[in-house]
Image (tube, rainbow, N blue to C red; front, side):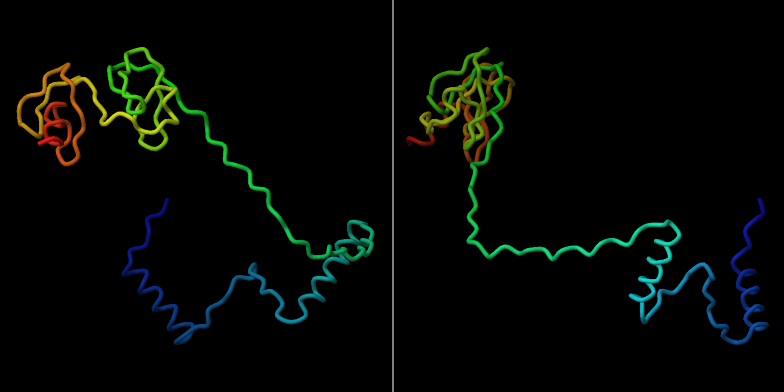
Length: 178
């Protein structure tokens, strides 16, 4: 494979070609690029179609009957309710409080997400209004309470508190009832 020509040598060759061909040679288009006809293109198209029919021995198509248009009618649309996919039902792995009924969710219970709150609730509580005052779960990991700065031990009841994050249930109740 030949080495590419360096840029400065290519520029010199272009300069020599320009001097030999004139100051500004007109750009040439390759012969393979055909310009579309500017006038009479419908006639040219018709001639092309006729020559194709002759070469392939195809009969000329019969003229079509005009399409009948229907009189304007007041259109009504039947609205069909959107079908939502069935809710995903899983088995609970952790102890939690159902925000739909306030009862505890025990490991092994069938649970699903509530469509409005996004919390895990019993399958029967999916379409209920919220009855539990707050979501309470058992702490699975150690941490610290953002309200009182005491440690949260594994197994203690905790709840999410707006502005604080996860706090002890007692701290959340104390914050709401001073």
